[in-house]
Image (cartoon, rainbow, N blue to C red):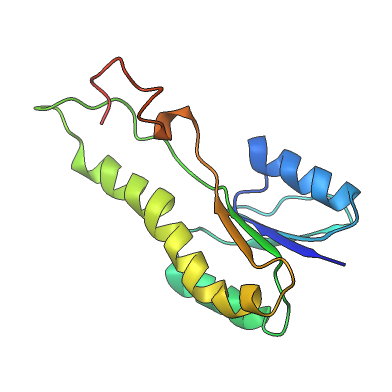
Length: 140
């Protein structure tokens, strides 16, 4: 049975991916900042993706569990910023969640991915991550 680990599987796209993979018979693990019941076929790990020590600890707890697909789905939107009104604290949070969180998962779970058949790490983004779609300007 293949195994999925998806970050931010408690709502939105992540929750739907969790539901579909569990229905397809995968062993499903997900992370969420708060405890949530996603059904008997899903293991929820309470974890904030900006807590890099917790990510490493989760990788240790799942030692010996091959992960076929790791989906870095958790993300936040920093709001619109323009030169002269840039909120650096907000953007530090955005970078920790959207960039450093997935990097920490990739690093911590590399052995789990290498031990699997699937060996796939993917990062999910929205239209906000697209240069082609963001042509109105003013959003950095």
